[in-house]
Amino acid sequence: MKSRRQFLLSGGSALAALAALTQWRAFAADTAHAGDAANGTTGRFEVTHTDAQWRQMLTPAQYHVLREEGTERPYSSPLNDEHRSGVFACAGCKLDLFSSRTKFESHTGWPSFWAPLDHAVATREDGSFGMVRTEVHCRRCGGHLGHVFDDGPKPTGLRYCMNGLAMTFTPQAA
Image 1 (tube, rainbow, N blue to C red):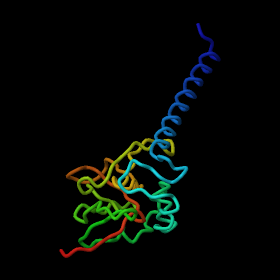
Image 2: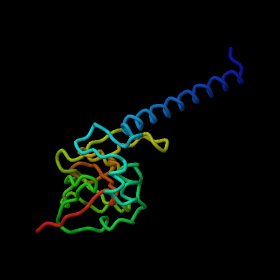
Image 3: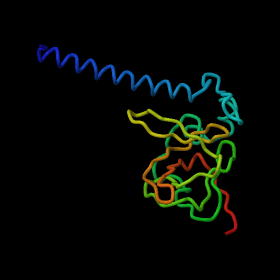
């Protein structure tokens, strides 16, 4: 029969092992996604640039979001209040990502959509910040766009919560 001390020690050890495994999986996923970040290139995407080229092409804030998976402050992007008919494209490679027809008011502070354009984005598991989320990135250049959640409106029930800094907007005639 185990003493209370042995029980608590074995339970604590099991929790520590589980936490270590979770952190390792998150690190492995982030490392795999980063590609060859040391020299700023990756061969996984159609559009690739060196780190220096990305920094030259993007503003510092865009670089932080697109290349370092940063997040802009809520309600800081003009695209959150963009209601004209048009297309939202990747600020890194100009690939069309979302139609204004799928944009909706999520009241989260970030531009939100219930669906991307066909073949525009890709996703991966994101284990950062001690939680598991689904990260959304541009399928052509790998730029970080935001995350997708399952609390959106019909018809998909999804909320693509995007960083406005990661996108540009081109208005179109209605």
